[in-house]
Length: 423
Image (cartoon, rainbow, N blue to C red; front, side, top):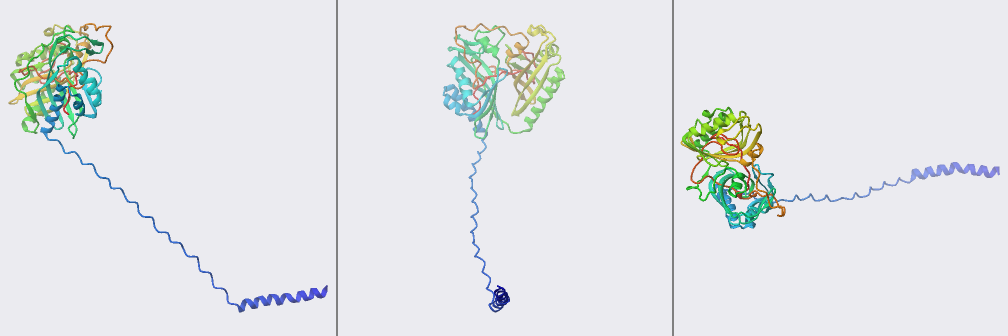
């Protein structure tokens, strides 16, 4: 055992030295080459999609805007409601001042507005009396005539045909987009006048007009010094009205001015008569105020929109009206005509029936047939009832009839209708 152990022990150093010697004699193995690096081809850069830009619509010429506006009335008169609807933008709105919420969308304007009105007046037509263009804004005065031979829808139910004729003027403002379609329409006329002509309400009103104006002007704004001067004169008149200075309000009025408040049964003619009316109005409504929202000129004309408001704390002898103590606020559309720097005509479009209702002066309408089926409210609907101005004459200044009086070159409340607008 010991020997064996010794022998085994003696071998150890040899083995170790032998290994060491071998290690010194054999050259070290060359290091392995690193594995080839895989090359990844870069991903191709994404190709951006080139979107073709939609060609921008070419701005319409004034002549094209006029044709677009006239086309709406042409299709309405022809009762081609498919073509009529195509003249409106899909998101268009149509409002009849002081006659409820506006109609939204081309379909509603056509179906609930134009077609519904034509149902009550199958032969109804709109004849444009005055056309004014300023930018994309078109203003028209339209004479609406027809015979009530069909059921007329009203807020209280359908009314049977009366067989009576209507003939009244309505004011219409239309905003066109760059493709010539109507995007916004506002119409003003007097409901009391229509109800009176149909024998549905006993209120002072104008008789049905049979003929329109002898001349039917079409004017495009040019930005001339005359237009600027007319607009400035109108603005000063409004300022004087709000100060209740009748004389200053009529400072630029012609001696033979004609003031046509379409909700009144007759015009006021002559500066003295108009001023007298204004002064009476100031006494009846001591806090009366005009709030003009927009005003623009075209040639000899100035178009304005806004509200007329005041509290009736005084009598109005000319209207045989005792003070009511009530407040009133109505919208208006007004157009003034200047000749040589003087206000020659004023046409004021308001819904006098709305003003009378606020003052508690509106007589109840004839009861609707209780057996008739309910239907949508009636008023000449959204697309079509613009009216124009009293035949041949050019009104002057001062309110009359139901709503409170307003100044000569200022405006008052306005109604709402919805004639076909400039499309």
